Length: 163
Image (cartoon, rainbow, N blue to C red; front, side, top):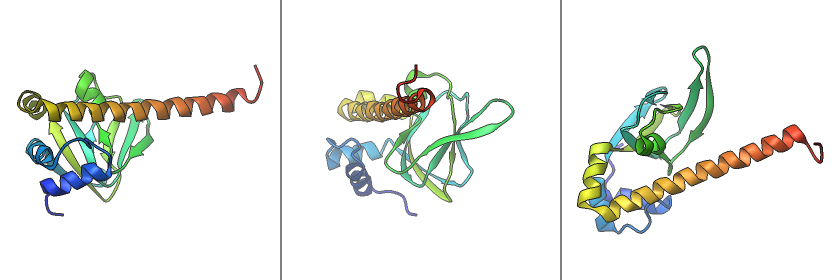
């Protein structure tokens, strides 16, 4: 696949409800701060314990998440196109709790590295704020999904009216 143009990036953002308030001109500027990464199935994006210096938009394919207890590795989920990954460790600078890897035959990501994000904050704060808002929404979806899963699990374990 040829590299994504600013116009492609604008269409990707609009169709996935990402940074929707950015104009085409804003997205053109933002595209200069992003780097496209092409991965093959099994390629590791981040490993458990890594401290995040990048976050990624998933453009194509699925990214899997797994945990390892030192003996066994277990897949715990995945994300597809239109999602932001790696934002938790990127912002809190704590070690990653999951390994992230390319699940699909072909995975295309758009990466923003910390030095580029730091430049974006200074040179184009409006765009940086949009990116942070997108990260907050991404984390909100994750927390809501986890809360829902925990609620269903508790309901399954306790059952109707049993205490």
